[in-house]
Image 1 (cartoon, protein in one colour):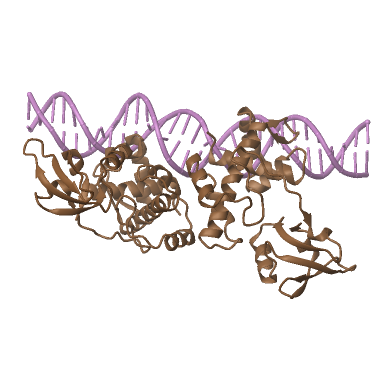
Image 2 (image 1 turned 180 degrees about the vertical axis):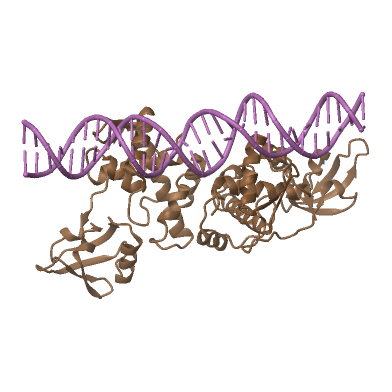
Length: 217
Length: 217
DNA sequence: CAAAAAATTTAGGCGCGTCTAAATTTAATA
DNA sequence: TATTAAATTTAGACGCGCCTAAATTTTTTG
């Protein structure tokens, strides 16, 4: 079994390698783990020894099939706990990340399986991210960004690309929640901000920093 | 904030000091923590430096007021999670200890508070142990052992002194669950085993190893 | 009550995950 | 392309929590 720290590295390597595909860089990992590049190098050697990553010195890193399976198990636990925290305990979607970060490392197959059942086997976490399968595969969902939607289209908000509390709280204050239908009525040629109409008849302007981080279908 | 390991020591020191009151011994701690006496000595010095225990070399150890508060916070979290695992996830009372042992170290005041509300602010865990208050005090409950009940008395099973899965499974198989009413109809003068009648009209003999570990009122 | 036994602490060391400083490799640029 | 800059790795160290072996203190007992 792998340590708390190893699990974190795997999870982060997975996240980075999907964000910008290709090899993941040591410096990027150092930033994400809030450690120094030297510490990352040490850990990469260890993960490579355990066959969890492909690692050529100075050339960045890629998960092996087994490494990816492990990473997805951690991500599955993380997202199931987030669902629990929001749906059962009433936390806001901007409050759950750090707590789930701890809960995700509790290793009991039975716990995860029962939690999944208790929650009704959810397919998505509170941010709209898909929950990996028990077998360790990530459901592939294709969403567009709101910034790519044309005038006149009506779409539903399905997820977010940015998970910071600040961003999520901004969405809350704007009334832009998951499942919310929005119709694009205008796109400013000046700053690419978007005017949208909500089902509540309200309309508002959404900055391009926001539209670039909103996933819709 | 205190480490995972320090929290465990505090919890165990609390448990041992209530079981046999007076100072807790280094060897006893070594056995409970599954480490060696030398390791315990190291940790005791550290806990003493942090003012969590009273520690005179070679003389055993006692929690300070602050140490006890911290211990009870951990125990509160442990027992609340046990309630969750049994009542919400459907685990058996014999399965939850190890998992709660991990969950208890997740430090979020808000999480504990919301969990408590979600569970309906339970007063007892699945083994009948009282749940410490948020302020860090242990409710004092006085129960008798079934081995101290006289013939003819009818009592209710309120808790257990032994928490091993084997013992709890034995109780399950015997139909001796928490809240169960039992009437003592005979006590063997030979081996102190007790014949009890359950509300289900069944009757059975209970060995003194069992009666000594069953709490009733 | 002195010697043996038991309990406890100290000394020195180890693996984990981290660090800083220095060496090395790769990428950028004059 | 030669040189500088940036990224990465290695060397050596540290705190944590643990270990074994040896020293010390307390307890037991002949």
